[in-house]
Length: 50
Image 1: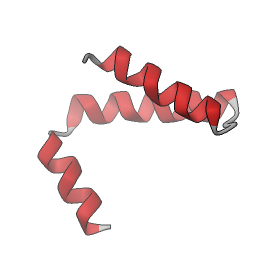
Image 2: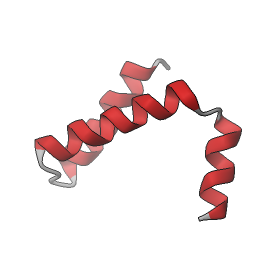
Image 3: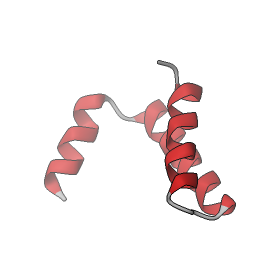
């Protein structure tokens, strides 16, 4: 699955949860940034630490 496909799933989930359009755009932007800058292991580690 590529980043655009992942972003579509994230956007639909947020839309289903009634997020405003600007909030969805911000989250999609952040997800895309993380996909480009963090490995799966880094993401897991950061989630575990919070």
